[in-house]
Image (cartoon, rainbow, N blue to C red; front, side):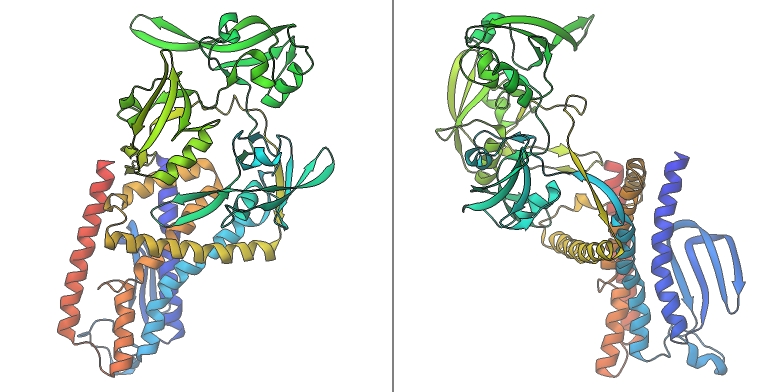
Length: 543
């Protein structure tokens, strides 16, 4: 707890210092007398005086301030210092001093991201681990083990590069250059359109159906199949074939291809067997030996089984799938009359349908059923206590823990100073744009007020990001700094944005905003901020 509190104080302390340092340095440069520079509010913990300025760290780390001479309308200064008061400065100087705080908060993340991006970093390579059987990559002949070198002539080095290369590319042939067994070849894929919707924006990209993660050899077993007759069960993981270890689907394909049809296959499989101890039930792993004749086909089909992908592993409580009677072990067969081969394809179709009704066919112990269904909102809560209610179907595929997944290939990307600074300078404006859209969404009701967080949420974020490593903590620091910069530019009284507006008003109208109007505006602004803080703290406590 003390360590987490330390990270929280470090996070806020750095961001407050950056903000107030902007005001302080520009005020000094403009010749304004600065009386106090404070990090935190309340009683002073430590401090010292140098020249005409007192520097201090106060007890409450939830903000800070720069106290300048003559920054109140009725404040009187000695004649020799009257020209050094804040309100005595011309509007353009006051505007620069006010703008400096948010500007420093928006510039600081560039330097943070520079250090995040600088140097060698491991990331996922473009080697294909899994190919969805009914999507564009499979139709084009892409196989597990292929390495994607370029998309429509654009070189790609990481899997994220490859995904980004398909933004805006869909429903038309796209040339993809591959490396397979040391040889280069070009195939044409026709990506399907996928819309990634968030509270901020919608990204439309092409999906071809590949993943960098190899698939473990887990099978689905129809009730009347040769595999079921031999004793195989759905979600069994094949460990070995005729004594040869298989770690992924590619290895399973390779080993069963060596055995003629009709020849016995000796399988060793891992299975989660149900157990009960008193009133407590659970599952424990066990290894089972199964022998069966080699069937026609490849991969799982050679075992008389199917790929596990469309077998339902779990059903969300209260979901549409549960209401329709779908249970774990059922297999999704078709949607709107079109046969399916992967959950990935099902998710793509459902994403496009949103709240439109669809006809679903699935197979269970009692045979096939077909019903007309519609996705419905389902309340969910993430690790930070944020709640949302997206449209969902509710049937979930088999998922693998990190221990189950075969090794994935990674590549080291080493960015020099120039490239790191370029990446940092590009990402900050993008995040600023997202912040502005979120704020706009709050005002028009597109983003729920429940997403607003306060000190408790920031404490949780600081603790969790610190656990994930320095890069994660720095990324959080950069995002919150951008948030502070954007928020402070809002034209709300008591925020920097209103003081900037006041300076612009005076510069244009050649007279200041009346003192009484300013005082009333400050009271209204303070009331709004108190209400906002109460909302944030209420959300924190609710979470």
